[in-house]
Length: 408
Image 1 (cartoon, rainbow, N blue to C red):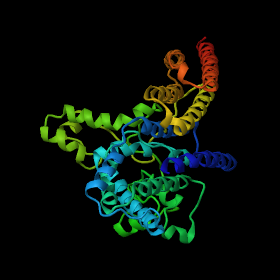
Image 2: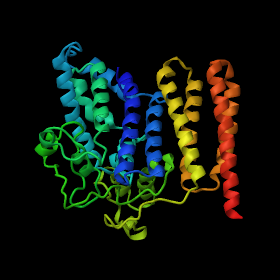
Image 3: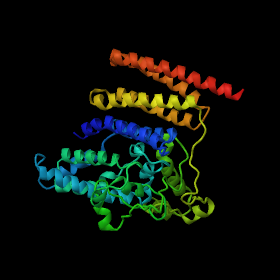
């Protein structure tokens, strides 16, 4: 059921993004940049599709706990079970989310969601693909005997709820703010301002923050500044996912202290060994002093990137619907067809000229994969894929021609 909830919600997500784009344009709110938005959307697609071709550690742990350590399973037919599970999940999510802002190795994964220097509904879909230990925080659900179907369903519902709070176009909502997380509350959570930082961790209910001392009200006198203090300065989804992990690993390898090599992963967010701070200092700009990463790229590249993202959405929906019936090699092929164009689009949006060479290579590999697995593909899907590759080739040639004209 959880997969169906997400799949059903996706069209509504995009409808709401279109509506927000319209009002953003009407109000001249400046909440969107195409390069930032496409990067967020790309990260969302990759995070969903990678789940379908990787081993589900959480599902295995859940089954193990419920078989050997749980109480008698609660009834999945009981409304009380669903209500209790929904509230408990959000309570546990609060502690996972709060810990992700306080511990280095958890922040290395979660930071992806906070890297956007804009704040709009696409930011909600900016999800990490490197999260590994989330399931640890939900062990109480396993032990208490919440059925797997209920647990994963309320998890999906919690995620869907969090989508709508990622907007600047909705103000404060009166009494609703007393109990539930709202756009105003979550704008505070995405702030890098000293006054706001690391506050409002709730997913659905804001009451946890009020109970445990992490609540902050959005103030008219303190404008929210979005992003992180160590900006990633990239639209490459792979680098965006792993740059903080790489930084931690780099410090762990280079520090002379064996104790620091181990403890760096579990220290408070931002902690570094003393010798690394001295030899390789990292200068972080104060909030509000940073210049947004917005490299020059051609209009051709932007339109081409939008096209590639749109096609990736189509393949993702196909993948989500039919992955269970596909062999593992076909799953991997689909994942390549979905992910690789998003990586190249990121390079094009950064104005990297070598991206075109990689794009021509990708199109050749894509056609080769289609040729190898053509007997396992439906005729209509084969035709669509070939048309897509042809249009992509024409688009790549147009970008290359435009670059040549600029250089002359």
